[in-house]
Amino acid sequence: MSTEPRPCEARIDCAAIRENARILAQAGDSAALLADVSADGYGHGAVRSARAAIEGGAVWLGVSDVADAASLRAAGIRAPILASFSAAGGGPEAAATLGVVLRGSSEELGSLWEPGPALYGLGTGYPGLGLLPAMRVSAPVMGIKTIERGEGVSYGYTFRAAERTNLAMVAMGYADGLDRRAGNTASMTLAGKRRKIAGRVAMNATVLDLGRDTVRLGDEAVLFGFGDEPSARDWAEPLGITDVEAVTVFGRLLARSCR
Amino acid sequence: MTELIVDLRAYRNNLSVLSEAVRPAALMAVVKANAYGHGLVSIAHAVIEHVVRWLGTVDIATALELRGAGIGGETSVFAWQFGPREDYRRAIDAGVDLGVSTVGQLEQIADAGAETPARLHLKIDTGLHRNGALASEWPQLVRRALELERAGDAVVHAAWTHIAEASDEEDSAAIARFHDAVAVAESLGARFALLHLAASAAGFARADSRFDLVRMGAFGYGISPGGGVTPQQLGLVPVMTLSTETVAGADGEAIVPIGYGDGISSLASGTVDVVVGGTPRRIGEVGLDRMTLQGGPVPIGEEVILFGTGARGEWTLQQWADSTGTIGEEIVNRLGRHIPRRYLGE
Image (cartoon, rainbow over all chains, first blue to last red):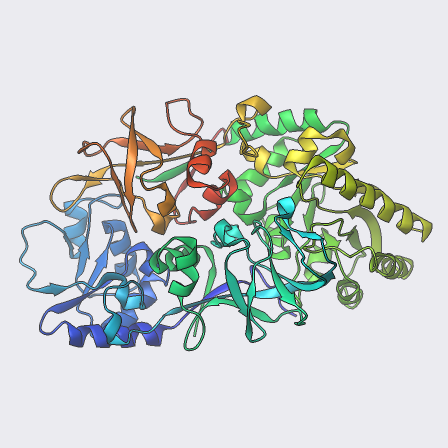
């Protein structure tokens, strides 16, 4: 038996980040690829993303401030780092000590190629390159039940069953980064089909409408992922946000594991 | 630097107001999700000093974290959302009260091999349709729990539910279903020491929802239910203030170094005001690690208050929530753990 802390998770594919870096480094011609690992690598983990990107051919790393750069250095990463602003963790002197260049300083950097979130297969900038998604978000089924026609689900009963239907409660809510606007709008993939969220997203739980289908406890509901699974963009667009924002928020809030 | 200031004096004030409001029922302080982003252990210790004897966590891992942080047996810790392969033994031996919804969970508890009996709160589903036993499943859940009690594996301590707050009529119907379920359980031989049903809004508003214990999350943090009701009207003080400081960007212009990568929703773009050096400024665009402000440049090193109590002209969570189409709980829960928390009144 094992304790399951918060069993919803973000799975990170470092090989995809490495491959994306390889593709982008080639596409960048002779310019040096800068791997942007700001905001903890857009939620993928700054250190693992930096390592994977360097393996794939990135030369520079980009971060927000000198404190971010210091954590990369503490993890043993020696690549040149470009920081966007001087803030927490110090200004020019601290930057110099860490071998970090501040944007806008007079240092000559040569030609840099900065595709930003494309490193994680995100954004709309480079559709033809075949970049791979690097994060998959899922949550396990924690409860199953059947309700009758007319019965409501979750706060405010904003969902009412049109007929007798099966429900699955998954252990993920807005405290995990699942947007409240997804209630009665977005779907997750569970037992091979898209299942719409029934009613409001709660803080730690969300209910999916299964119709006549059944699932088992512990089955995995997937919000977005790899290969044939829905993309982060499929998830984000109906919510009126970018895939970049959706992925970054999940990555910063969820437990992460590596593929 | 960016920091999240948590005023424990405000939190204690709110607990006092809420204790008074629900009397003679007791108060459970809900500290799930890192105490709604406020910091689990600091909030839990503030609760204990305040002599609230119940903490609610959702999951077992958080309950064990509290026990590990020195929250002793005089404080009851309650968890109610379990995975299919949960470590019940550790939970029971750490004296964690378990909110049980299914016979399957009871079987796992019986087989856990714990040293002491598990203290159970049996959950009836009165219409919310998340966890909890349906009325058709309830007698079986109660019977099996009583068998565990007779075998010395468990103590059937409480019956509880969770209501939808869809309307007063719907809530009345749910309360009636709860009474029915308790009567059914008693007819089967259950003797509950405690009954609990209400969370923040209903517990504050309706005496008939309070029973013995009211579970308060949002209101404790000074987060009001929306719909135009402010925390002040309820006698509550917002606990959290989020602030940062402008820094120098590449071209020497000032940057507000907080963005959606820190948990600020992009929906705040063009809709929310922040206070910069004492003056309100509308947010322009929220980016990954920074946001722009409308109305021209600002100085470097200037304090920016994103939200707080309103005492210095900053918006409250209520105003943010109303302007971005959500509730205060979602805003505080999205703020990443990487943002340093600073506690006042520790």
